[in-house]
Length: 611
Image (cartoon, rainbow, N blue to C red; front, side, top):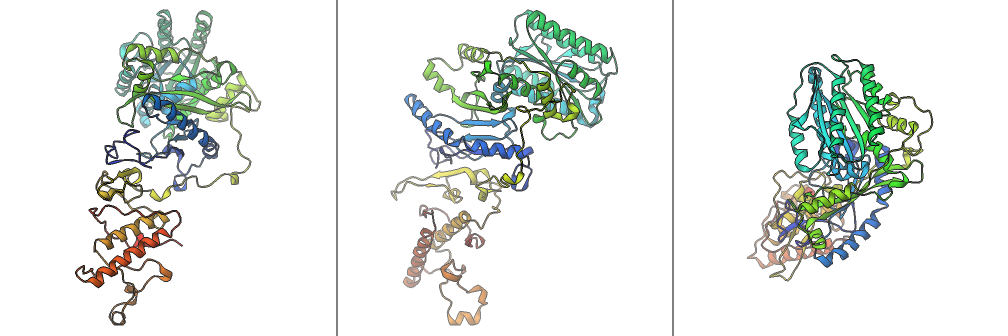
């Protein structure tokens, strides 16, 4: 049904008074990033993604029931609850209430702070980016920038972050001596600095790691850390060309990591990424293996960079799955929601595991949105106050996940991210609980996941918007929820509407028939019920035949003379017959628009009835 203005207003559809968006509180919708929907009809080709769509469907009744309970609770505060959703670890996204997505293929839950916060917990993150001259080859600096921005975007106020760049020497981005809190404003500053990076010079690994641990040391001395795990993400395209050699780099990293455990009780995990098909893998993999970290090769044309860079939060997610962290949840800093546009809200999220295996298998994250004005009513505080922000920081840093993984478990993660090439050979055991088991036969899986394909190819306005008609003067309160709604002149007009490829489906047929009935009522054309003997002699038979078995006749170009009582009566009779025909279709209730509505062009193709 159409949203009421007091529930939600989707600005892309209208002001909520005359036009709004369709939604369904009893159903969920599923979306995929474009990189995952490359099969026929926009279907996923990865069996695991298909399985995620199927098993998460089982949660739909609970999600609908929960939303109903949320409405009951928040009604006491005169507030409409927002969305509840599940983001799978592979990028599938399911949410309730069901709505159309404004731009298909863009949303990826793995890039959202609520997802990473719940799957990795509070952490100190140092991004180390190679800016030597060779990074200009194959646009690798662009890949590194995109990866770094993706990581920074996903951090929350519970995290601390710093960026180190290196070529001949190393330097800190932004001029900060320590790691800084990952607030929205600080993240904007870092992203601007990342976009300004340029590549030139040689490649000095030693200076890069030396400055990295120097920044971590300064942060600890000032007690400005998250107090939790440390992740160093090292991005490079080549091998050492200046400064100390590989063996000394490995010794430095190992010595500093051990010292941080001894002096601060903090574990440092190094994740190395070799950018480009021609990149040297030897040193970066050696560094990762020697520090119990993870090495990943990144292709020059990596389509799913989010998945490629996900090893760091997946490792922390495994730690969160241990028994001592079962009650962990994460809050994100308040931010402007997309709908209603600009309204400030927050998200609370928790990780989801299959605990029937050991270690527990990370499935994804479940989350709920909350409007800040709702929390203001409950807590009696200004949403913009520093006290409110401190509440979120305190809630998000209250628990530090313990990362206690065996060598075999870390090697399983390496295998999951990069196959056998990425493994360090620590263990030859099976990887139950980390690498998901495949179904024995792909034939068990559905080949087509999608419903509602009748609107494929249409604009957002035509797919999602609905006109709310004034009940006066006809005493009719109606929502037109099909594709004829924009003809009421109330909803935004599509500037680039394309015809649906499903024009012969029942829905497409219904819309066409309603349009034809409107056209009849306004005297645009008449139906030829029976050709006269004279017309058969003068016209082509194909232009004067009725359809078989009481179907929809072909349209005539002869105009109705409404001054002629016989033709007026004939037109009225045809309208009545058309409405009876509509009523006979299962599940269809014909709706007549207001008399002042303009008639759309008549499409003969749209009038064809599917068998």
